Length: 178
Image (cartoon, rainbow, N blue to C red):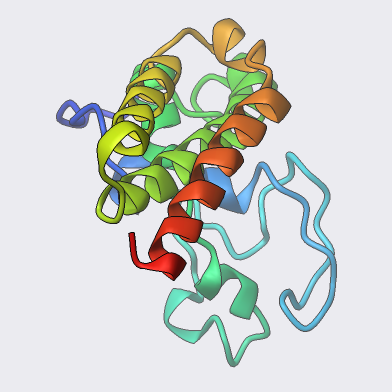
């Protein structure tokens, strides 16, 4: 059972919970702490997630003990996985894709996080670094549109290392005023 939603723009880095199937409330683990009122294993829905993929305490997250949820940003990875990678399928509607969908979400969230920071850095960079940032941004955008299997095969450590080096250089240039 898919979610009938309009197509997404390719590079959409703002979370849109209406286009997602609650992936951030299911895929990751939560550990009871000052950020989360409960411990939840990965792949199990948060008990606060409704059948319609919404948070039943969204307006009261902080007082209910979930400031970690308030601070969390998937940078649009949830709707990308739901609408693009899995074509509107949901883990509830198509349970056989659940595990793979959760795994892809973990990788996609990292990709979208890097896309976000690269986009921010573009505003500060010029010359060869600007060109390198644009090239890496385009490369990651293409990776984010691959099949689930291809996304899961991405060497995220290498991607993070490359992006980290570029962001370090952009930061250095901002600090020295160049």
